[in-house]
Image 1 (cartoon, helix red, strand yellow):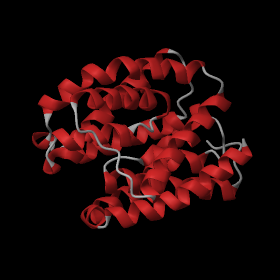
Image 2 (cartoon, rainbow, N blue to C red):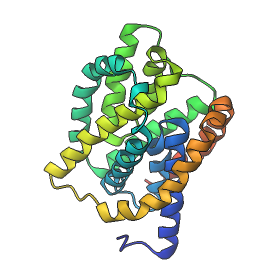
Image 3 (spheres, rainbow, N blue to C red):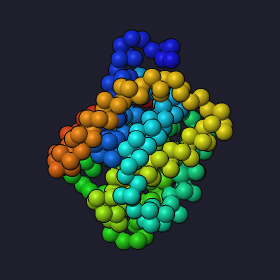
Image 4 (tube, one colour):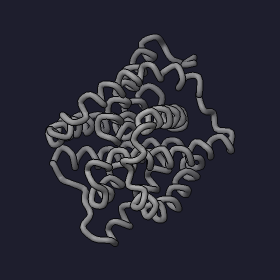
Length: 244
């Protein structure tokens, strides 16, 4: 586990997984989008981090959903999968076949776009059926490639799913998306780094617990939270582009 990492890098990895756990449970999405750009400074291989993020997402969403499946909008979830699944599958195979440098650049580019919208308080939103479909198709492809398609997908779900059911419905969707991704990894013999992911679960649990505790407060201060995070992410992405 982490054989190529120094003790400092292992410590920083732990902090990053606390952060991704916090974001995932605090916002209901965005763990990969806000975590991967930082992780690439420690190891720039997308296929090194994504299986570990996937293991954690499956584990923690299962914990969160075990008593909340009644508060899921199953009807809209089923409708959305018609547009999400095909580009998702294409995106997964793109992840496995595109050069790593392209994937890393893609992640930084997508995250940079999100960061600018958050900093400027621009809301990604949909107001018609055709735009819904476009955002779902695009978000499905991005999620298949890098697990960072959440903001595009959320922009559609927030219009059709009640606020009381939104987070749980999104958690079921993330579970479904990551299950497809992880199954593909296993079938194609991608290294899963399972023991590293397992070792990081107690660390990520700290962030997950904190995120659950402050979820309501984050929603009450959503604009301020996203503006601060957006500004920091812009700087991180610029450093990432320079590193590339």
